[in-house]
Length: 125
Figure 1 (cartoon, rainbow, N blue to C red):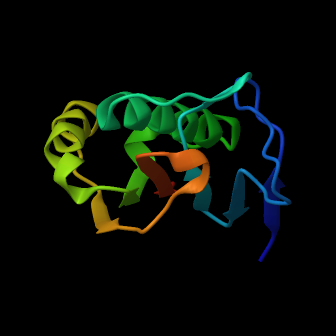
Figure 2 (spheres, rainbow, N blue to C red):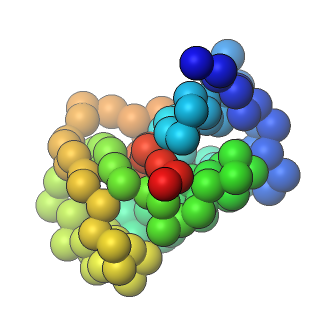
């Protein structure tokens, strides 16, 4: 099966890590974890603000890989403080009418001291 590595995406800052933004295998797109990163670096905000930016990057990467937001079937959310889940849940409901499956967990530390990291899997029919 052919693999396509998505490394450079317009509007998505280049990663300092040796990773791809996404890897497409067949009709599936695996999108790497995204933080609230801008061209000038990470910007701290509320959990919701950080999640909004992370999802924006996930959607840009999916689009570059020829997948849609509606094609997202799985979301992985890592929090530095799980007490901030309610405000991100509200955003999640606003962003996804299709209710993708997801995993939520708290971690000891995220890069740059971020509050939220988002990664996703998208599919095509």
